[in-house]
Image 1 (cartoon, rainbow, N blue to C red):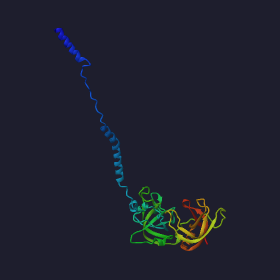
Image 2 (image 1 turned 45 degrees about the vertical axis):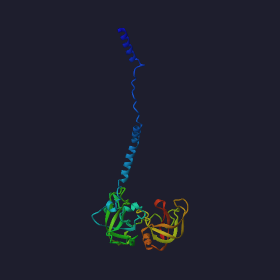
Image 3 (image 1 turned 60 degrees about the horizontal axis):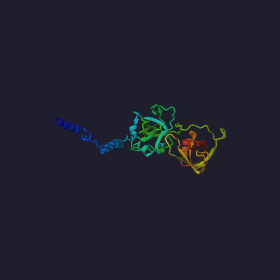
Image 4 (image 1 turned 90 degrees about the horizontal axis):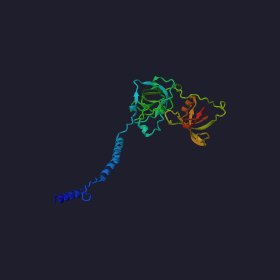
Length: 303
């Protein structure tokens, strides 16, 4: 019996340990959470994009630096000056609308330039080491209307308060062309001999100096013109009676002109120009090269 019991116990033990009869322990594999992975991936993609868009919107909404009117970018001196020169057009008529805004309510139409001794101008015409080559003119009071047009092309003496451009390299300030604003308190015409805007050119009225110099003769009405820029001394046009063909212009193709820029070559001729405004005259001189490959007639004789 004992042997039988032992056998049964032995058999029972054997059956439990048998790999066939043993109960298998199943370990469940964790399920892959595809939704979670997708959410994280999308977050990594879209969160930086949203941040970038936000920064761009902030940059757009940030106000740009305001354009400064002239009174904010110039500094007035503490004393008046008296200066003699020639009144010309300001040359600011071709400014873009953005550039015009920098001058505030109005753009100066006239300037004082061609000083008596520009090369050795006194301290009143110096700022930040630069020589002032012209003054944009403005009346001292909006109720005082100096008719600068009546003095155009004339030699005048002006008393006024200069205001120098101090931030010429700032993108929001005016490109002053080495000019200052001048608030005018008084103006009077003086003798033309008090101004010397023209230096005699090394050209005579004959071809004796060089046979290559061709002297053209033109007839037409002499009129004033607006300067293309403050520092480009194109001040007179000749409206021709008949077209002139310029065979040597920059295009390389003969060009027919009905209006020619003319410039006196001496101060004596300048006085004759001023006495002949809006009248028909005949002038003589060579065609010369000027601003941006333009051409003008350098007048050496009025016939």
